Amino acid sequence: MSNERDLLSGLKDIPDPAAHLAARPPPARVDAPAEPSPTRPARERLVVGAILAGLAWILLQTWVEGFRDDLGSPRVALPLVLLAALSGLGLLLALLPRARGLPASVRALQALVAAVAVGFLAAAVLTSRGDDVLAPLSVHLECSAVALGMALVPFALAALVLRRSFLSAPAWRGATIGALCGLGAAIGIHAHCSLDEVVHVAFAHGVPIAAGALLGAAAGALRGRA
Image 1 (cartoon, one colour):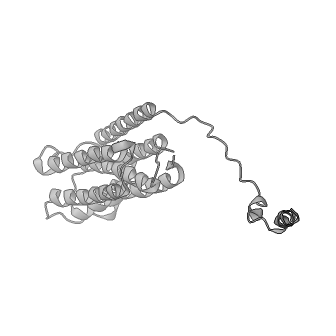
Image 2 (cartoon, helix red, strand yellow):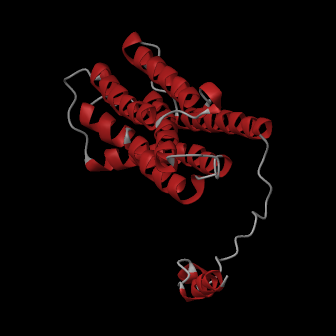
Image 3 (tube, rainbow, N blue to C red):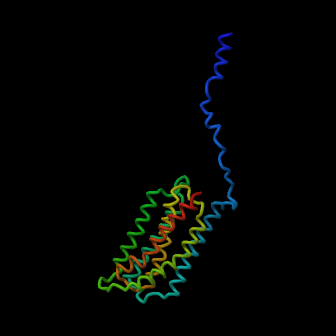
């Protein structure tokens, strides 16, 4: 018995391996969000409403600026129709859940951003007549300003509706949505501006795509994670 008592008393001399954890200050208190998160059906309605509102804004701005005279020609209309299809299918791919409710993978998003860039550049080449003279800088800046104005409302609506809605890779998801919003604005400005010089279309008409990808990535990283 004395040996057992000696062993038990010796346990008190063994240092506590978790003593440093107990000495740590308690974690900071995290308050619940002040505003309730919308349910999945409510969020879906908000997303659909935002898409329709953004589309209506681009169409309205294009109508205000005026449609180009050759909009109905196959050389102009066909690439615009294909880009519009790419924009719609891209939004479905980026927003709709996959099997077991999982979102699109990062690789799929990266491929989609690349498809937007490549598709728009291909459309710029296809619609070019090849004999256009390089436009002055003022024309480039004017078209860029109009294109960014067309993209302003879709950008704002996407940032508002999709905040705290990305479970993973929020920067990539935000960049993808932003690039697709910018593609819609690029379609709008190309339906207005009849200047088909490749450099002008790629940079002046394509600026909302690049701006949307960058702003979307920043907004996703800051406010996109659920």
